[in-house]
Length: 164
Image (cartoon, rainbow, N blue to C red; front, top):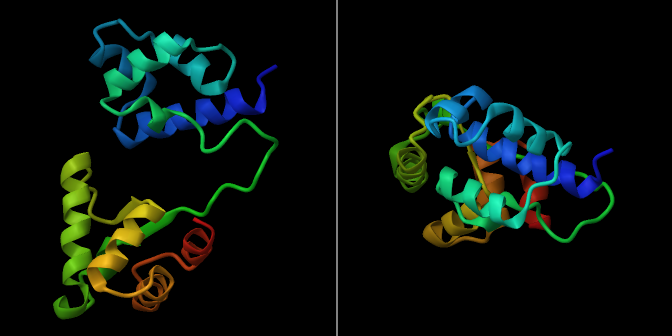
């Protein structure tokens, strides 16, 4: 039976893989068989323990630091996951450029770095919102409320900013 920590680690592994648009089979193909779909899947389900060495190799394969694969904080009991910060890119285009220009440029930069051009939504981190607050020169909670009012950020995002 998988521990809470192995499930949390597996969840992070799955999140990184899916952010990169890869299926389990896609990982096996891209790695030319070095990473078997069944093995990566068992890591993601928490059914199989991953060594530190293999975790470092998987981080290298995904092009992320090892810390990006690790769950937040120390192993502990179940906690409520932080709300996802999701920008509505279609609504963003409806906001006047003089207000949304910095956010639009920031979102386009993230899309470019991720190679994520679905054009509808974009997941961001609470740290991204804090960075945008510096750019807009307002507190993060104020900016979060403004983005929610524009309809470009999901309403439960404020909780992530207050607790992040």
